[in-house]
Image (spheres, rainbow, N blue to C red):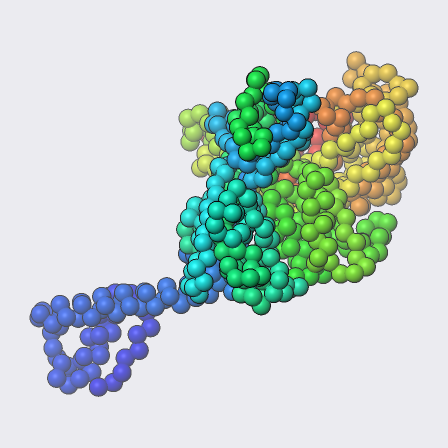
Length: 638
C-alpha cells in the first residue's frame, strides 16, 4: 500500500487523501466509502488529523519570535535574547505643599503610599510615593517642595527565603510599574521589625557583577505579572541567614498604575499621612497643593508588535551605542515614554560637529522632553557610549503638513453633506496616525492621501488637494536675535513672490501688525525675505526690504537680527508656511512629520456633472472650478 503525503490542513481534502490511500489497496479499490459506515471512521480519522496538524502548526509558530502570537510566548522568546519588555509607566507629577502641624515638632515624615488624588476627565486617580520624605518644621509649618508623585496604588509584599532551588518571588498584581519597584533584604526576626533593610538594585545584565553585588533581576511572566530573581553567590549576593548574608526576608515596595490614563491631572487634593518618631501626626489646617508639573509620561505596557521589533535590535546593540539603531533601542529602554527617535552624526550637522551625536526624541505624550528627563537619558547613555563620543539632546522639531482640499460629491448619493464632511475628517485623522507618519523620517504619500479621501464614501467623485508645510518659530520677546527654520523639503517657487507666508507679529521700531514674505532672485533658487504690512485697502507696504534669506532648494528660511515685541499667536509663536515642490513630503533628519488635520481646510463642492445637472461642463468650469496650484493669499490665514 503506497504512502500518502498530507500537505494541507483542509478537512475535506484530508478525507479525500485518506480515501485515496485506502483505494490504493486492492481490497477497497471499488468500495463506496460515502454509502457505508466506513465514512464515520474516515471522518474521525480526518478530524483527528486536522486537530493534530493545527496544534502542530500552532506549536511551531509559537516557538519563533516572528510568528508567535501569545504575549507569554513572545515575552519568553524575547527574554532568551536578553530583552525585558517595558512595563506600564506611572504618570508623574510634581507638587509642593505646606502642612500645618504641632509647633513643638522638629521634623515630620511624609509616609510612603497615598499622597494626593487628581482628576482627569471626571475620573479620580490616586498618586503615591514609594519612599518616605522628611522635612523640618518651622513655626508649625512643614514645607514639602517639588515632590514627585506617581499615579497608582502603593503596595508592599514580603517573601521569606527558604533555600530551595525552585522558590519563586512573584508579584501577584498586574499593571505594575517596574521602574518604581524598590527591593529590600533583611534578616527575619523581631530585631529587624520597623526597618526596611538593605536596598538591592535592579540590573538588566551581569556585566561588572560579582559575588557581593546586591542586585536582582526582573522578568515578566504570564498574565503580565513580574518575577524577581536574586544572585546565586557567584553572580550577585545570595539570600540567606548565614554569617555574611544580608538576610532571608525580602520586602518589595511597588505601584500598580493606570498607565497613560493618568496623564493630564493638574488639580490635586492632599490625602497623605505624616508621622514623627513613628507616631502619627495630626494636620491642623487644610492643605493646599500647588502643581509644579502636571501629570505626564504615563504609558501602557509594551505591545507585542513593539517587543518583536525592538528585542532583536536591542540584542544587536550588545549593550553599546554605536549605530542609530543601537541608540533607538537603548533610549527606548532608558526612557520608556519614547515614541520615536532621531539620531544624527555630528558630521551631518550644519556646521559639522565631529565627535558628537545629536539625538531628538518625540515623547508619547506631548512634544518636549523635560530637562529632568534629558539629564536622566544622558546619564543612562554613558554606560553604553563609546569613549570620545559626546551625546546631546536637541528639542523636537515639528514639520506640520496641512491640506486644503476641495472635495466634489454627487448629491444624489448622499443625504447630508455635513455628515459626509465629518466622515472625511475622521478618515484623514485615521490616516494621520498611520505608520508612514508620526515619526522621524516619516513621509506623506500624496497618492495615498487622495485615495483616503476618495474611498471615504461612494458619493465622492474626486478631490483637488493642495499641500502646505509649516514650521512654528518660537520668538524671543524684547531681544535681538537671529533665527533659522529648516523645512527639509524644496519649496515651490512663484517668480512673483509670496511663496513664504506667516502669521502676524510686531517688532521694535515699527507700528502695526507685520508679516513675512519673500522675493525670489532671478535664479529662482534663492530669495530675499522681507517684512510687509497689509494696508486697510488691501495693498501691501514694504516695511523691511531685506530681513533675511530664503533657500528654495534646501527649504530653509533665515531671519536676520530682529527684535520681536509680540506675536498674534499665543505662546510667542509665529507660524511660517510654504508650498512644497513635491506633494510627497519627507521628514528629513530630525524633523518629525505631523499631518495637522485640525488646521486643514475641507471644502465640499457639489459635482454638477455627476449629479446630472449638466453634461457639457460649462457651468462646472465657470462656477465650480478648483485650481491645483497654490493660492494667491498674501499672508497666512489660519
